[in-house]
Amino acid sequence: MRKVNSTEKQQRIWHHGFLLTMLLLVCTCIFCTVHTAQAADEAKTPTELPGLTYDHSMELSYAEEFSVDYYNDGYALITIAEEGQFLVVPEGKEAPKGLSEDITVIKQPLNNIYLVATSAMDLFRAIDGIDNIRLSGTKESGWYIQEAKDAMESGKMIYAGKYNAPDYELILNEGCGLAIESTMIHHNPEVQEKLEQFGIPVMVERSSYESHPLGRTEWMKLYAVLLGKEDVAEKAFKEQTDKLDKVLASDDKDTGKTVAFFYINSTGAVNVRKSNDYVSNMIELAGGKYVPEDTGESDNALSTMNMQMEEFYAKAKDADYIIYNSTIDGELSTIDELLAKSNLLADFKAVKDGNVWCTGKNLFQETTGLGTMIEDIHTILTTEDDSLDELNYMHKLK
Image (cartoon, rainbow, N blue to C red; front, side, top):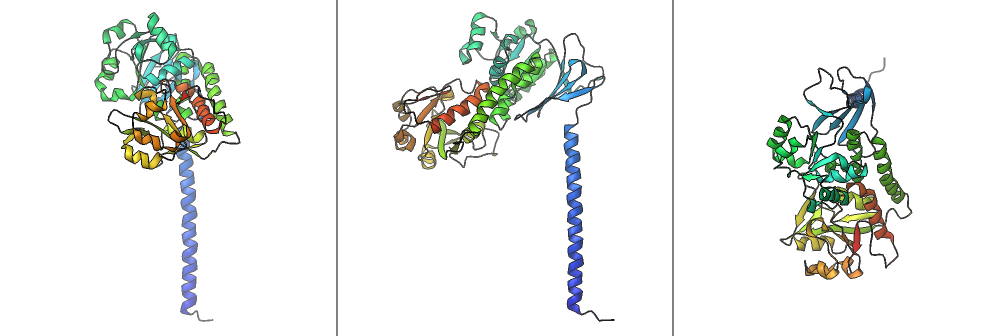
């Protein structure tokens, strides 16, 4: 028998070790794949409700902060991330016996909603649901949605106090069946507790947490479940997705143009959107590139940040376009009004080239028009019409 030398021994040991390592890697991958698949299946598993049979789940294109599962006899279970679950009970039906106390019951019909989350008003408007809102957490002067202003002027909708100071007596007298709050309610948990003590279910709106712009718009489907208007919501939502699809299918979907979106606050600081904010994403979807690029993404829950004008100047002065955010600061009409806020802006490329636009104050309340807003931005970036000065959500400063 041939004697094996030390080199051959080392080679065999290395070879066996390599095979063992590869075997372990394969086993690990198989385990991870199976485990991931199981986790995904578990995530998709609908909640078991006593006495009800699961039928199907709502198909969502962009929204990630909510889901809807449908059950027999018209029951629907809404799940909102970090906010809990809500069982929508059809008119004439009762909540099933033995239902978990963690599931909030909402009974149809809903005709006296107390709406505090301003971003939801436009979503109700899109599904012809404003008549279902009796109580507003915003005064008439604070609405930029005409249908809401008209309803308050006519008395069909009445002011019932803001999120931290609701008029409990009025809300009870009006027979409120649901309060829709923004996440600001978490700063005043005692308000939510008191409403719930009075038997009024509280739903917290989280559309602003959607990363994709049309994820926000898709929340109209959630409110459509409450009113039984899913078909209306599907049609309205498709109008916005069609606009986005048209932009994405265009030959100039990537223009390479840079866009600064900001406003200047009362202290002279520049308020910009963070890089992962939905406004920044809209600019990217429209074929532009948002600047400044290095704005914080996950350092806190806020979607904006302030920077000193000198820093903003260094990072954004070469931007091809400026979109001034008027929703907080008020609308501008001229370049001179912009320069009055900071004379440093005169050195910006967009100002020199005459590529400065301003949003309308209705932009952030009109949640259903984000596909249209993307279309507006795309038009700005691609138009060769120098006379164009008015779009759906923006106007040009001269």
